Length: 454
Image (cartoon, rainbow, N blue to C red; front, side):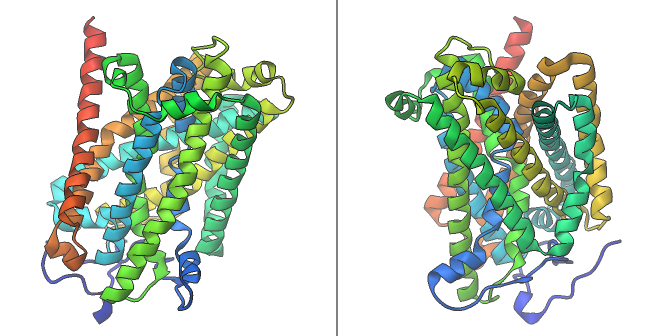
């Protein structure tokens, strides 16, 4: 049942710029529940710290592992530049998403609903749900593989078990949003610690690593490299994260004045930049470990997480290397489910202005992800799940433009943003990124069709 939100004088949206008034706050149960006190800048920074890490989780989920492992084992360090560029794009776009939420009081889904016609909003909603299902698919498979590697649980059963994580999410939501953020940060620290260990024992060539961060034109000319590169882009800049970030920044109780919003925008950007830098380290570490361990040893076709797990300890000669790898994978998969729950709720409520019980919403998306994942695991085995992981990330990339263009358009509209509208240079940069993403996706489709016809 839809719930109406009576806006107070301090929360009124701009008089112009929107077709429809704001009807309800985003994530009403936690809206403006975290106080932002006065004091030193670091106290404010700590108060705003959290949403960026919820967003960063999506940039290091199991789908990233598949594309990073494939890229590192097959092409060495060459695709590190794609991870870097993708991360810079993410910092820009997530900054715009947080600004939209703080300034307008709308998350991106609500903004689309209040700006576009009803049919257009429905189409955008369906596209976003497809992206969330693809992301959920990666989380399901990654968690199931992690359970299999650590505890020997068959992948099909692991896929079923992951459906129960909805209970964890519901428990945390009732205990407070800060607890949810703390758990997410703890899991991110676990993943980072595991890969720091893997980096140390894999002993990569630092000069080659540095060279890998320099973009190479050959990536566009090689269909195989481009396919993995687009997968990395899709795994890094995720469409549903833009909806998520524009919502969770509104959990802070900042002053609803121009000065208060300006402070909130600044600290929200600082939070997401630091968090996404952690994601950059983890993504780069996965690719570097794959390049230093597999590519160097001639194992250039390691695209499957199970193969990486099996080969790590023998190739590195360090006991526990594979177990640490699997632990990080399980932490990554479980972390992603937490934020996936929120994203699904935000998108459905924002676009349709309806509320359904979170456990029901999560079970619906889980079933959508579990059916193809279970089918693939049962009938095609480990090889099939690995290919499904990479395909899910390409699907995410293809959906990305449908979130990016509305975001850039809204934040570049003075009627909607007032004095917070994007500066000319920022508008040009943001549209350049949006066009670049759309162009890369078009290139991928052309290369894919050419491969089918050939």
